[in-house]
Structure formats: structure tokens, C-alpha cells
Image (cartoon, rainbow, N blue to C red; front, side):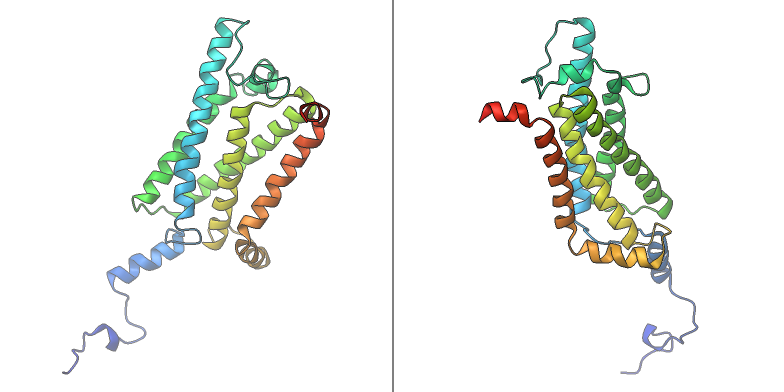
Length: 229
């Protein structure tokens, strides 16, 4: 059987790409094609975002109840260390002039929606991933500031807040690794190679990150934990 001159295998090297190839090239340029963690990242954004959204909503309800009745004891006030009530009354709980959980409701509603869209097959342009990167970076910085404040200024931990911490960190981690792999972030080649090496051990790096935070919590409140043994 003779091939037609229009057969794709016979196309000259300098010929214009077909429409499907043009779309694929555009996807590669915008970082919209599947990259690392093609299944993990969408589910992390959906499930993690939904969990953090729920925590932020519950905290908002608890805050409203506390405003109505200063004697109200939040459901997440378990002991002198795990005490949402002790955290809610501090200025750090309203950094921008309103309760921090309202930020969480807005932010994690967006994160959850993005996760659902990715699972449905959506593809986003580079500018969208850069916007998400800016958001998760601001979130992880804010979370670590809150961790510091909880440990060394307030002297108490909010269980629902800790759930938000536990979700924000991996979301930042995997969105960043994805954007580096997809070349969405304008970084030097050396940084990209390092990120590629780290990607192979992504779970190890994340585990160490959490262990450091857990260790800081254990050390800071050891005098109390010791009484429970």
C-alpha cells in the first residue's frame, strides 16, 4: 500500500505542525500537561482543601459563639495546651482586622475547586499556576508565622489550626515541585536540577519538615506532656 504525500510520517521536517500538535506544544509551553504527581496533586488539593475548609468553617462558628458569650468554651479547647479558646482571644487570631478563619474559608474553597477541576480533566495556563503558587507561598509563610506565635508567644495550640497547618504545607510543597518541573517558575537551571532530584525523594523531605515542627512542639510543651506520662 502506497502512502499518500499528505501522510504525517512523510511530512517534511520544516512543515507546519497539525492542529493537535499545536495544542500539545501550547500545553507544554504553559505547563498545563500532566507533570509530576498527576494523581496525587489533584486529590491533595481536593481532599486537603476540603478538610482545611471544614476546619476554617468550624473555627468561624466557634469564634462567633465566643463573641456572643465570652464564657463559651470552644469544642477544641481540650486542655491547657490544646486550647482553641486561648488562641482565639489573641491579636494573632485577627491579623488583618477580622478572624483568620475567614481567610481560610476563601482560600481553601478556591483550592478545593481547583482540585476538583483537575480531576475533571481541566488544564490551566502558566499564569494560573503562577497565581496558585503565589497563593500557596503566602499561605505557607503565614502558617509558619502562626506556628511561631502559637509556640513562643501564645503558648497554646489550636487543633483545628493545626489541621490547616498540616494541609497547607504539603499543598505548598507539591504545587511548588509541580511548577518547577513544568518550568512555570523562572528559576536557574541549577535550581531546577536540584528540584528534580528532590522530587525523587519528595515524601522524605516532607516527612523531615513535619518532624521538625513536631519536635518543636514537643520541646516547647514538654513540661506539660511529661505530666501525662
